[in-house]
Image 1 (cartoon, rainbow, N blue to C red):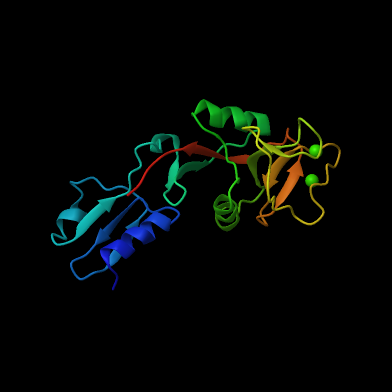
Image 2: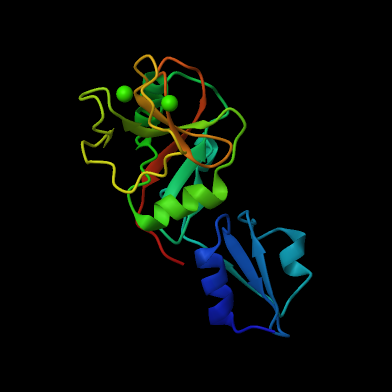
Length: 188
Ligand SMILES: [Ca+2]
Ligand SMILES: [Ca+2]
């Protein structure tokens, strides 16, 4: 049993909650989708209240998902591109490569991004060797390098989160999946 407020907080801090049911007997069901009002699952439960997260700025048809606790829209690509190709793709959708530039975002990527072959983040030391910067020009703080990284092996400049969740500098020309982010202001 949980209160309606607790249920809202669970959705707010969930990583993929887009809406929730709160039943007449105080049960909470989080959903990772937005249901249409005509959906039979709503009308079958007349005493259940249904709440949606405000995802007005997350373009769902472009594959973006909402992370209410940041708040932020993010997308893990389905396509593999070079780092600069990935950067251009995110920017063409109005966003940028993901910046793990707060402790919350660092923790979120660590706990949620585990992809075979790794995922590009929006950081590189292309401009000045050894000085890793996000694509907005801010300095990378508290990087989660794997032991022995960044190695700059044969001039590696672009940051990837490996399948061990830790960071590596890699050759920017490699084709990888990537994370985009879109800024949003949103609340339940
Ligand atoms: Ca380098
Ligand atoms: Ca490396």
